[in-house]
Image 1 (tube, rainbow, N blue to C red):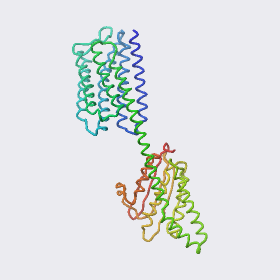
Image 2: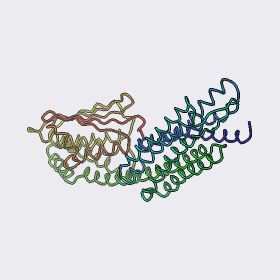
Image 3: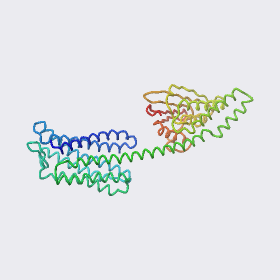
Image 4: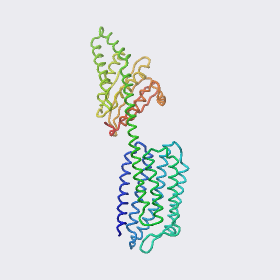
Length: 435
């Protein structure tokens, strides 16, 4: 086996290995843009199979024997097939990038590309039974036949159409994407022309490997920028929400009402007044302590603030409002004020609207199926959960809490409510979401 063949097999073998590693890395980014990530994974895996097939084709080319006879034909067939599938995967990926950037549909262009690829695959499949594009001699060496230009033409047409589309929407792409995508298309086209004039080293396959590397780099740069932008937006939103929450938590009228109740209790029931002062102090301390905390806090700390709040409200309303704590799981964290906001919402918009004023709030936590679960249940007036879709009005705190749970700990919030019977709020935080 000559030196150039060994070099090419080594390069393509490492290229295939690199593509597999890239696919694994891309799988870790699937949470941000699933369709785009899967599209690029298909692109790099198609190139990996192409390179692996070419390694076998080169390695067994010129060898004698029945095994070499079958391997060299199957591997060469796979090289051509995967070449067209690589174009199809590239079309799907680049098309999605263009549609996202330019906010247009390129469905018709994609369909044309797919038709070209199908024509090429059919042509290569027919050649496997009735050779007219390429064949092999008695030593299993590849050689072209008079109609080999059909394969070159279809492949080149597919590449040119991708290039034409990208040039048309060139201004919509980011700087790195412009260079990466342009080079990744020029390389295969130039190498295809060179290889057609001088057959030897599979320049097209080597160029496709360079294309994948450049496309992967462009994707990762874009992914990094999106993660950074999302994190900045998350930090900005959380900071703004925390200020809003502080204003909501330490409401002047709540403090005024609590202090008024304490004032009148001083003469009638000193112990009651002392308890209210202690719980109001605990509530204020718990609210102010987390003002500068940018991440989630221990559930125990959140529950202590909730308990102080419920104690104050229960005494203030002459025990017409009761509550029950059924805490079985505390080994996780939650966004500050998240449980408190929902408890306050249940009391204010659920129990206090009942006539006569009476009711109960039950707060329970437990761990099940790798999920930390918090449930807040009341027997208040209930409401139509459809109004939450409007994201405005009296339940805006619930909507924002749902968003904070998602952003900060991958949590979910589900609400079931029946008018006249009450509301059940369920928070679920995955084990892997613990901070």
